[in-house]
Image (tube, rainbow, N blue to C red; front, side, top):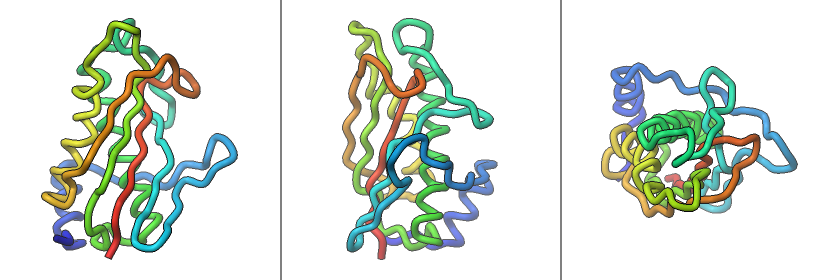
Length: 156
């Protein structure tokens, strides 16, 4: 099920995506930890041009804006994953994605916001990018970010 490095590189290039370097942690944690064949990525905040995208879904951020933010997080997650394993071709499968959506109490489209991340991972990794997932609405996220997503991947 492993996707070749060449096809992943080609897909990213065709999508106009350049993977970022790993961001420095904002608190006392590591950006990733590998144990056995699993790589756990810490939560990544929605950022554009290095600045946190702040706001609350259902208040001042639309579902489509949240989905676009989740897509940006997927790009950051892939950058961190590449740093963790050295080569995205080593990814056997994206196992799990967990998404926290900064939401009002009556906002119920967290799953649609999270699709921004899930759809890009599936587009880049093919079947190996299809994953189990949870999407939660939360009262607040660090730095006021609108979305935070973490990921678990299996490596060869």
